[in-house]
Image (tube, rainbow over all chains, first blue to last red; front, side, top):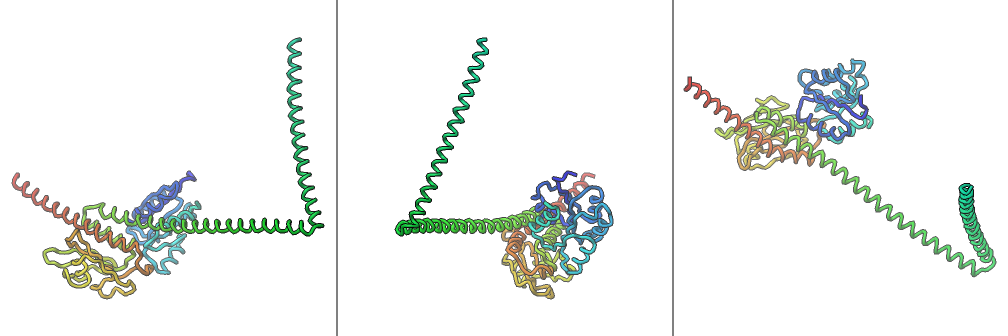
Length: 126
Length: 273
């Protein structure tokens, strides 16, 4: 993989949120952003290509974000890929559950675009 | 033979030039050495003389005091300039944060407006309004009212957090929602309360196209992690008041024209068969 490029997968059912996240992450130099509209679509994309970071919503149709995270972490090749959860679920137990399943960070909506950007930079080590 | 002789002459000239340069350089070094030696002697003489002569000692002391004062003043000047530069840096850092925030806000407003006008399907428009209110404002319980022009009643057409049928119809001009839609003024209260009374929203955004009432967005409670409204939220209220109204209105008109077109097409098909 080209190390100057950072492939980021956004798994989010809301087109508005996806567009906002793309807007924020496009400011990262060399960012290549791929969108998935639900958990199943996300799983298909994450297992068929290499990604450096995944942003995952929890409440989604077809397959929710928690199921997706557990399936990603079950794959040996994807154990180290950073996952950021972006969700409306603000309860402590939701956060703990997502982190226990293998998410690296947990952000609650409404989000600040610059917070997502700085988190992505730190996880991508750029 | 003559050539060999010329070559030797040339070599000799080059050597002499080099030698002269070396001699000049050595002379310069000796002169510099002499100058420094004499300077050192002069300083030593002055020190020795000052040690013996009280007046000279005082003169030397005064010179040193003046020099120290000069350096002190120079230091003060440098410190003042440093402080000014630091202040300027703080100012720039503050401005940078402001610009970043403004940039974020503009991105939110741009995305909202882009999405609202991306479709002419009323169901899709309502879905986008819901997405904006949940994801960008952070509301937990809210509804979208649309005015039924025949009855003059505001009817809930989309909701989140509470089943749609629990939201009562609102007559235009009465209650928080009806009054906001009639006057066109957004109402906004303290967001700390519970969403018990579904006739008293904490925020009511009237949706109007010019002076024509279209409906309203009524927010009853916010997500647990959201503790108040930011300036961006108020900008989003204003954006929704205009753009969501236009998007709903355009989708309604498009839906009507589609239905009319289908009816006319049906008649034409009937007549031509």
